[in-house]
Length: 474
Image: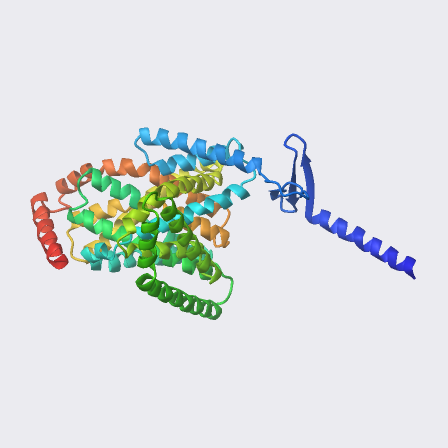
């Protein structure tokens, strides 16, 4: 009887061994003295050092090497693109595409690098929340909020209809509409400041719409899990109802903490870090990560939690000081995140489909310019001002990469559509400075063709509108 039991146990152990080998295979890389684990989907994972009976410091040398390659290449590409007058964001993306599996293959296992790079998303949205200002939205209130919302809704509707006509998933089309509605705050504001147009009427309206779009990013992150679900309409509405209930409770608790706890906590951190800002910086980062973690545990998202954490601090007198402390950390992890996104870009795919990408960028510029100009015109602004605002918002912004990454993780989009949107966004940011340089020529052509009224009448309209805005602020 014992012999039979032993034979059964031995047979079971052999079966378990072969089942494990069917799913995973172990490879020992002698050169690096490191073991990797490869599953049946060819995902490669680096095994940690073997345990010792004494506590030792374990170091993953491959992760350190990969991070060094990413950061150095991103810095070099950023410097080159900055000298060329191009957005450094594009340099980070290009650096990632060159060192990734689709390029020179310096980094082939991206799991660990992408995991570390997710901190870039968290700090990016935390800084965005710190810069949130309700007073700025009130300056151009109706056109910024209602106009921005109408622009997003129109693009979602158009893309949803196109998806249904092409027999694609409606949720994928709606997401593409959300994706295309985002414009680049960093690029546009930099252009307006350089041209001293940030206080002009078209500059204020543009900045107001950009602020609203940035705020909408946080809400879109909360809705992406619902859009990525495979349930029916009734279950989808139920899930959305539960999500909105959890979101309302989360925001209510955040509002209470903003009023009662946050100012006192930050004031205490200021007092404790009078000699050095190290403690205040650490406390700010910890607060951001804690809020993001709580939001994720509630079924929302890390991104939404970090954005809410920034908004909570933005209502206090310490918002600018916090932003100054967090900004260097944000810049580092943002470069890391964008480089990791670039690793997913296959240069060969983009080169083969360069004609499709160029056509997509031209289509995006034309459609966004038309939609934004029509929406702005509906709020009583002149044709010239509306057209200028449309051209300024015609690109796809950097936060679209964050939305795209989240949608990919949720399997909302995949395959060639993912690469197409990725390449279109990168090419859109590259061509934006060129498009901005053509604005004076387009305005002059419009005046010659009598599409726009005389420039003097437009300036009078802007003066009257700015006087009205200042009166409302006072």
